[in-house]
Length: 524
Image 1 (cartoon, rainbow, N blue to C red):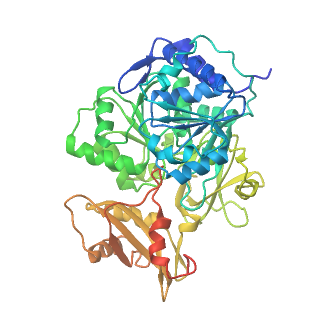
Image 2 (image 1 turned 30 degrees about the vertical axis):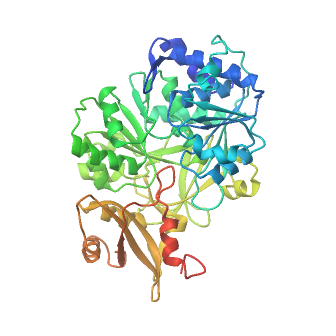
Image 3 (image 1 turned 135 degrees about the horizontal axis):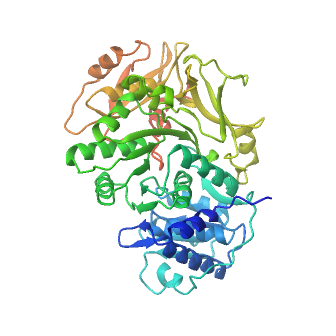
């Protein structure tokens, strides 16, 4: 018997078992799973009335909202491909993505409409633009009410059909469109819900944008488990803490930079949060000191995961294994700060330039590669990039890592960000971990800058906490006390804010360009 793994099953299960339970808590309304399903049926009928057919792309430019969540399932029922758009791009970026994706319909929140107004009319493949939050007769709600909420006759799908087209937020060049099938998203959901211990007792606050790799797949596995999902339309630490307290939120997903802001706000406001809370983090690797702040300062459980858009996206977790729970607390924090070990359903290893697995000695550096059903079908209309990423049955991540004796993977750098100074490899992440230990440092990034003698040396770019001050010499001395001198920054600059991608990753390439502008390339 073959039963295709189709994502619409997740909402079906929630309706059957949790139909009267709150599914969505948005700013001005609460919907049960039964009511959410009715809106999804209306949306599917609306899409069909617009001529959307199986395989067509439906683009969404929206914050975390009811409309965004129902968009996934409404599109899937007609066999369409959900194409979420990053909410922090420039008009020309939207023009490229809308044209490259061949999207037929664009749903856009009224607060984000100015981002695309000047280009959307020039995108010939966009046949319809529908605005969320527009209270007029032409707005989304009025349009939705035209259609029946009753069961929708779905398009027949196979699990290998494409469900998502996700554009990576690269730091240079045009973004690439990642094609993920129903099967990839479905199996990723099963693995993630197990490792993140998702249950029907959870209340998730959607902090991580749903445009970012489908919110790490959260609209799928939290829906499948009948969890209540609280929407967060604006990433503000005060709003986050307010909603965690008000709605008894038990789990949040976010980037480290956002969590850092939450910690700052928590220390200032001291909200009354008594329920158990776990926070799932991915992005730049955090130092152990950061884990300590979360677990001892917030009293929240810290879970580090690792992945990338091309893998649906999660493939490792730092959740402590049974044999690690008796270790001293500081050792536990060190383990939790690592990328960890492979999730069920993904083979993950670290290999050298010849493709051989590196020794598990915590020293040998190699590239993380993975083999999994979660891996993308390829980059849309970009066979060359697909063949470069997937070689001999393994997806190459471009992330450099070491593996300890227990098999725990620790990312040491992006392949392109390794600093090679006088023939010595320096991990910028290792240096950043030390900088974060300084009580005056809020954020830090370490990049390579040119040096006449050593080729290149580490330079620290630091954001200080409010009302704090530091001198360059103090920072360098602090690092030299904790690192080999060749690893310590040779210079320091202070700025108010680090440049970041829309997903919260620090754009080191932006920082490096200033220092390498007199050179033909950004390595020596």
